[in-house]
Image (cartoon, rainbow, N blue to C red; front, top):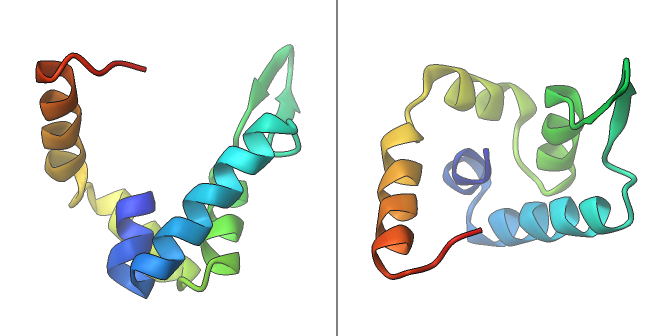
Length: 86
């Protein structure tokens, strides 16, 4: 989703979105209880995208289309090849 935020609203929005996600993960305010599981909903992520300055509908369309899947996979493959995990 972060790549879709960047395409929609630029690099500043990407970094604001990413920082907010990690901050909320650390303080656990991003999680919703569903049954016995703690999850992060699409709605929560889209709200964070909007708070960062992106258009929610355009980000959702980007995510749903899978247009950034290859980009993210290439980044993950590059990181793995460099010995980075996580």
